[in-house]
Amino acid sequence: MIKGIYTSASGMLPRLRKQELIANNLSNASAPGYKKDMLFTRELSRAEKKITPKRSDWEVPMVNSTYTDFTPGTFDQTGNPLDFAIDGDGFFQLELDDGSRVLTRAGNFEVNPQGQLAFPGGGVLIGEGGPIEVGGGKVTVAATGEVDVDGSVVGKIVPVTVPDLTQLKKIGGMMFAVPAGVQPSAAPHVSIQQGYQETSNVDIVSEMIEMIISFREYEANAKAVQTQDQSLDQLFNKVAGKG
Image (cartoon, rainbow, N blue to C red; front, side, top):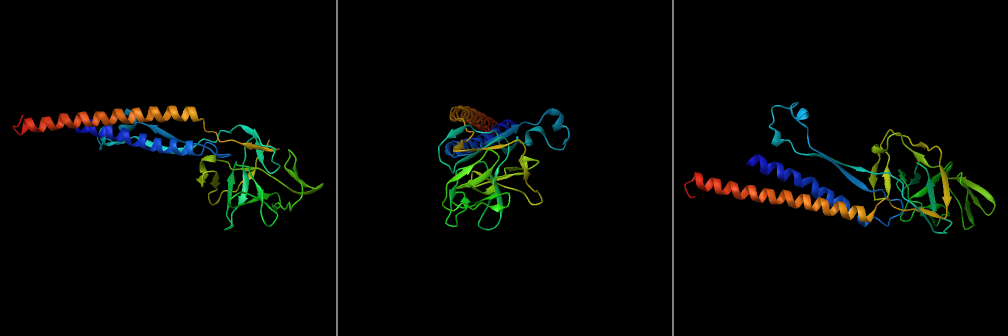
């Protein structure tokens, strides 16, 4: 009986985590370049359980972890010359105020007081030779990433990537920190689309369906815990001579 309560209860925990992830995805559905988070959940198979025979089956909880889905979003045409989208794999590289560098797929840039292409809220866009100075002129970006201001080339946007995307740590919703010792390299076969923004890869309808399914699964496990607890209470009363 206790085994059943534990099994049902352990099945509730990943559902709570999934609800949190879905809620966060929905809140960022309109954020440019946002990549949704997902939950990987599985139950240990019998073969895996035999690896640790000292622990009874019901003591082994469900294994779960989160991961980021890097599937590209769609491109929305904005007409803003400071909006860029990467067609292909890769990220824009930003340098934050503290000198650290992060990656992002969000391409809604602006010109900071220093005349550099920058990310709203902080972070300077890093090009081939460092920050890209555009001043107050007319900015034109070629598909190859070359940045032209009033007829003069001032820099080049170079999308970068890392060998293993699972190593990236999401920070601030749309940015990803690169772990120490990993050096980003130029992403192959990419082009820059000026006047476009990449949308988030969150499908609102699908997320809502997943939220309902997850809630029903949580509800079913909670009901199972309640039923087994009542049965256990009746059993104790009978043993104690109260039934």
